[in-house]
Image (cartoon, rainbow, N blue to C red; front, side, top):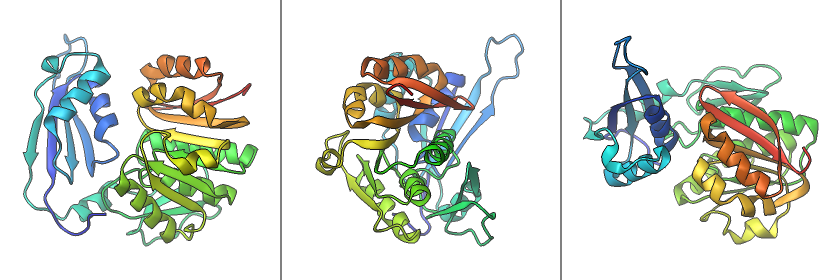
Length: 300
């Protein structure tokens, strides 16, 4: 976890709504700030044009970003608008992060940064996250959708064991452990995310409830040993969700529920098709802005 003052890197692009949504999906959880401004006021234009900006602590890889954006949008990298990457002057990015991370209410969960000095609302489950670089603060629609789904599912039928696949900050694992009082396996491809999850578990008195580890996809030995799971949450991107559909479905208990997020609403059909093919049935859908959170199971 990075701390203290330091330089920020700015990504700037000008494009349509689809480009703005794709860039946010790729860097939104890692960015300390993400914003879009209307760049065109021409009423004759078929769609709005946006200036899109994201601030990150780590220097972005322009080529890798272009390749990922092109893949998500289904175009050649050369067809993308210019990607401007700029190193900003040293700033107190922690102060900026605090300003960008207000408390969030999602179902019974009240998510706040470690800088929060107020009193959580009565009757809410308070989750405290370190106000460092955001790996999932609850402010993004994908994370908030998952929290709402978790709240509803735990209230309906508390799970006995759970998996947070692509845990980021660990916010979803924390939510499940706190609401259901159970142990949760949390994995992420990024070792920093796994370490951050352990830090946040410690800060919330859930150190003994959450096992966080790094590993690619579902290839984590302990993940398989603890299967099948009554509840699995996977807040990643549409492409890996589709690719991993058979493996994720195979980890789910016969009466288990699966929560998927990180996908644009327009990507729902492809994701649902992959999980139907893996034997799962769609249940409820939570739509927040341009993002969908899907709940599936066997005969939901």
